[in-house]
Length: 146
Length: 146
Image 1: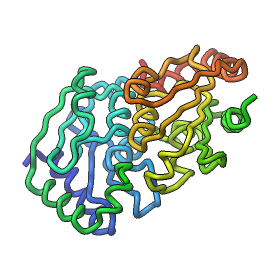
Image 2: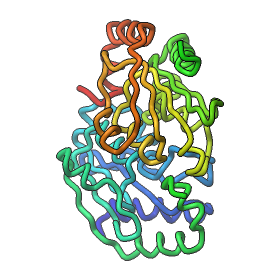
Image 3: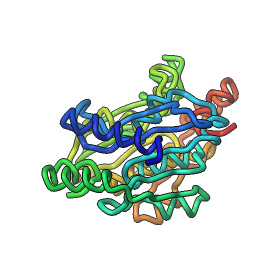
């Protein structure tokens, strides 16, 4: 498997082990991980720290020139908030673990010129299917659904 | 002035007094402020806590039914990330202090059915003009520009 998707999956697994929502992400600048994160809704009571947002936060303040040469890896198709962050910072490429359990704003991203690659990794699908089956209310809260 | 825009401006002024970026926001549910925030880039080294995001975070975990009856007030036209958060959580209405110094994703919001009202408050324009003139590099960092 791609080593950076593997790192994003490890983040998702950490989240799962903490009793959280199993979505992870890493931001890679010129072949080096500069930020990694996972969903913190349960662990920190956070409404904004989705996996991708947590990776942005942990990457810290960066100039536009760094984001312009970075690739974001995420285990799940990015929601509107995370896609918006990708657009804000001009991330040129996003690699997605899977979009079978949730279809995010891939069309918006592509329409704005972001390269989007979907790997459909079995481990990503499996984690999300298990989580959604066990905690449907928590999942709905995370994606703003009733 | 609208009392909730006044509260958002007070948040922006707090940020300015802390040496930060003067953008503030409040989220109002059925006439009561449930979250208030201001940009935390300087104060917390945060890449994700724009004013609106800070207000979402401070509102805490909320069910979709609460967001569906909330109005978000922000002193500045919301960037892609904050607009994405508004879409994720299904906020039906956004009241914007001004869009003269920065035009955010108002078209995207309107296109997705969000009601957008722009007040063009002089105090909001004045704060942003002063800040951008004094700290252009910090401002560019906040909006992902070079």
